[in-house]
Amino acid sequence: ITLLEYKAELYGCHVVQVEAAGTTRECASCGVETAKPIWVREHSCPSCGFECDRDANAAMNVLQRGFSELGLEWPEDTPVETALPTDTHSVSAKRVIETGSPCLKEPTKAATRQG
Image (cartoon, rainbow, N blue to C red; front, top):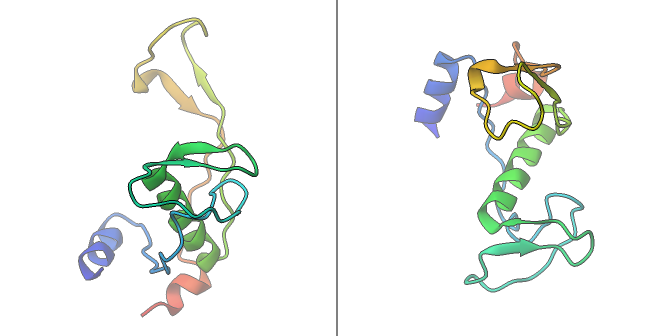
């Protein structure tokens, strides 16, 4: 974690350690816990119907826990504008403009308390 903290400081980011236990069982969308054997690689929530890769679900839960530690909320999806018609199949990232992506520039009080 020390290397991550070092790199984060170089690039103006924050690192917060969170408890990862249970993140593969907890639905990142609704929070319901569903037991599944290790060989099941897909997360499928019986409560809300959310489906994604098991590891991606766990990563979203870790991110949510980190946001919570910092006193932040899960960001909403950001709409984008492109210079091409909507029926275009692929768009270069250079042609996409984010329309409302907030950026955390200063550490929150929770981040400055971390060791």
